[in-house]
Amino acid sequence: MKKVIVNVLKQEKRIALLEHNVPVEFYIDRADQVFRSGNIYKGKVVDVLPGMEAAFINIGDEKNAFLHVKDCLSGGKTISQCVQQGQELLVQIVKEANGNKGAKVTCKISLAGRYCVYLPMESYVGVSRRIQKEEERDRLSTIAREMLSNQDGAIIRTEAKGVDSSEFALDLHILRTRWESVIAKWKRESPPVLLYEDYDVLTKMARDMISNQVDELIVDDLEIAQFLRGLLQKYRPELSGKIQWYQRKEGIFSCYKLEEELNKAMNRKVWLKNGGYLIIDYTEALTVIDINTGKFTGTDDLERTVVKTNKEACYEIARQIRLRDIAGIIIIDFINIDQEEYRQEILNLMEKGLQKDGTRTRILGFTRLGLLELTRKRIRGNLEVTLTRECPCCKGQGRIVSFDTMAANLERELREYARTAEPEAIVVEMNPVTISYIEGNECTMSSRLNEELQLLLKFIERPDLREDQYHIAFIGKIEEAERRVNPEFS
Image (cartoon, rainbow, N blue to C red; front, side):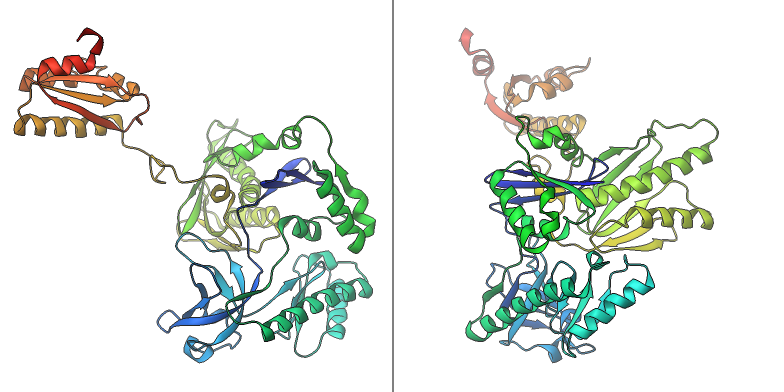
């Protein structure tokens, strides 16, 4: 049982895919964020780097796009043999720009339709691995080859399972017409220029999510509901009745408990049903997932406790990967997996859990240290990147200096002032929580400095300061320090 829930605001659209009323995928489309994966450009080569086997392409962005030799059409050649500086090039974005990196592009153009991905520059026919019956694979492959020439190809999608040749032909015709318009624009436009803009999130959702397997698509905006009905009426009229307009007063995400789930998807710790938990940490190079038994102590022995926790973790990890849109390298640290038979069982469970994931995922196996390695195709920034920003306090580290460290740093600075300026008093502004910690023991900093240096130390509470911040407000005479601390008595 699948449902698609759509929440529409002028500046933001949120889409959730539910399986058996459990959210497994979130998509967020904002007016000020343009996702360009799939867009096709006429670009110009601005730099060729033989040492990196790559080239930089001007497609009109602030940062030049990156093209690796493996994404060129000519196989088995060096980058210098494939492209030259100043050359005009037809490229497609396969990975969004991220941070200081420009978009990643390919010369191997593809256009995604309902039933196939059209490959206008490659004579290759492939069938989705999720179509497992050999007879159906052969049938679809035969249909595709009869409709394709020796110069173009296609990858048959899972949705093509069971469709007749006329439906497949219509889908292929639409994609070929789209490609012809790209070529026409290529001939008349100068680089850098956008030749083809891929569908927005809602249209892609209608193309990819709405199928015979989806029971309902519920949207809280009448205009969008009518747009989706019209879209389906044109291509899949038998599915248009699945579009429902949500009219209740309660917010649609609140009604389906999705606000809570979206907030949970930002948490570092994810609780399992049995009391164990996952820890999910992101780095620039990879994502690490650690499994812990937590509150679950089992009823029989440690080994059974560990086995049960690991098995439950497999399904939750698969869900979290889809839910958070985690991509790139993923490392999973299961608990005490040494036996080969047990490792194979974990691999089978992970493969089963990821079967419904529409994004290409590869399970590479266990390392010598017992860590499971996966890779997942990166298309856009994950949910954390979309919904959060870098903390201005910790600058993305996730931690700030401890009270003890800050107190020691402050004391060193005060002692330096005492030696050089020889003041009678110093006034320090600080967060009340930090003052309470520093002055909350028997041997306080103010009493030590008074005893050792005959220095009067006074604190002023500043709630607006972070707990790891302080500001030295005054250095000088005692009378002025007292006046600053207690201005009403001056």
